Structures are given as structure tokens and as C-alpha cells.
Image (cartoon, rainbow, N blue to C red; front, side):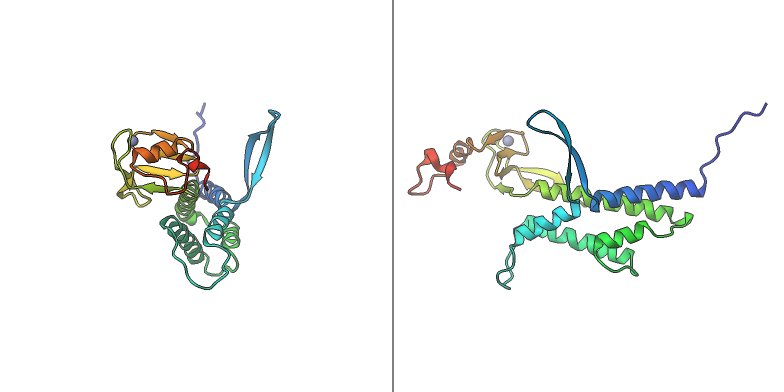
Length: 222
Ligand SMILES: [Zn+2]
């Protein structure tokens, strides 16, 4: 009796696996996002949000204002990251699809529908990984909104900087203390100060309230 042998993967198998990765990556960047949320009554329901690409666009538009004047204004560094993100994504997709017209979303849909051949599987796989990288970058940029750093040693651990790896794999130094609308935190030791605790936190850094502001209520001042 012949033992059935597991067939080798064919070129078509490689193509279809890579094509699937590409489709998934395009959906992660430009497709609607679904999430399971628990409502006030404890029921689970599906919430639908716009695509990551659309959220980035709204984020950038919100930060740049609605253009009441033509004067260019300087953006905080994190906005520059958003601007760079769009330039990378849009330029790369345009280079991938020279014959396609329309938005980046439309060009990616055009690419996903292209009649790919078995020899294209490596390109599809590499490009899928690149798109997934853009999605991860966007998540980080959006999570960092309304966040700024403080150049002072952490009152809890004394660290002034942490070493982080940037998107290019380079090790870069960043301030340890990060402040957002949710409060302040230290990237080095993980200490968190709530919004109410930020006044005390500011005192420990040597900040003093501005004249005319009651320090007891200063955190009510927006
Ligand atoms: Zn610390």
C-alpha cells in the first residue's frame, strides 16, 4: 500500500496565501473597524468605526485646524509624524499602482483586485508587511495624541530620559515624563499621576501656580 504523501505547496498556494495577507493588510488600513463593546446594561454589541486611514485623516485635519487663513503654522513634532505618515503611505501606494487613479484607498482596492501571478507572491507578502507596519504606526500616533513630555527628572525614580527604539529600529532617547489629558506618567518606572494628582506632581517638579489661580482649584482651569 502506498502511503499518501503530503503534496508540496504549489506556486498557486504561495500566491493565494500572500494575496490573502495583502487583502488583510489593506482591510486593516482602509476597511471599517469592528469591535465588541459592552454597553451600560452589560450587553455586548458590535461597534463599527471608520478605517484607520480615515481616523488618521480626521486626526490630522483636527490638529491643523480648518484653514481660516493661508498662513502656514508650525505643528508640534507629533503632527509632523502624522504628515510624514501620509506622505509615506500615499507616495508608496502611488508608486505601487502607477496606472491607478483616485484616492489611496481606491488605489489599494485596485491593487487587491489585480490579476496577480504566482511569481508576484513575494511582492504581495512584502507589501502586506509594509501596510501592516503603517497600521501599527498609525495606532501609535493616535494613542499619542494630546500628549507632551516634560524635561525634568521623575519625582519617583529620578530618571530624566528613557531609551526607546524608533520606527527605523534606531535607539533614541525620549523624556521619561509624559503628560496627557489623563494625567502624567513616567516611562522609566511606570509611576502614574492622575489628573487630580498632577498639581502635586507639578509642585514636586518645582512648578508654582500662576498669580491669580487658586492652587487648590488649578486643575479645574482648562
Ligand atoms: Zn519614574
